[in-house]
Image (cartoon, rainbow, N blue to C red; front, side, top):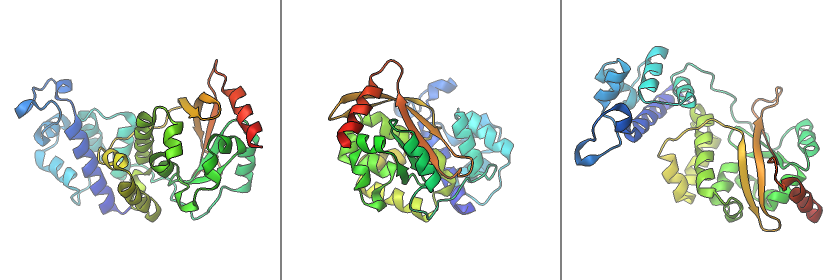
Length: 278
């Protein structure tokens, strides 16, 4: 993303976080009409130790060069998480932009072999724009449509927000979809100007009201391994642990692996699914 695009994204993000801040967390009374959310610009400026003008310019995406210390102070004032701080610093030019999107259509052969070796644990690889680069037979058993969906739509975020099968597969879709969106934004903030990512976001805005509403909230979250639930029509609810890692030789790719949650029957259920599929 060009510097002007990063400044605009930074300004919009700060404005969204300011509007959503709970005033009670700062010991401040509600604004007129009992509005309990939202800080004034002058309040954030005071808490950050910067001038109102300077902070206003930050939100407006002006052509200024805020120091790392200023961005850290603003982040603290807005009570941002570590992920939020990293996001702000990266947009301010104080962190690597990370790998750019790749034109390759599939994962390298050695990574596909790794995915296959991870059977019967459902596993797949993601490109920086969250396009699905490869998967194993266990993942295909969990989500049979992955092999037949159009390549242009074979994107995790697109499938989560537009594929009815995926929505039915996730009993907590409302929570999971919001988290995925927040993780996607955290990972791609500096690359929102990349053609592939920009087109994906615009398509999703048109296709999904839930995505459009969530995108305008500017939520961000870092990835955390966690338990996930899947409601498969053939075997019922599967309890799986969600893990993510990046190969040293291909840091632009993320490998996502689902393992049976401790004490669950997910291993037996997955074996049954794979046997039925083959």
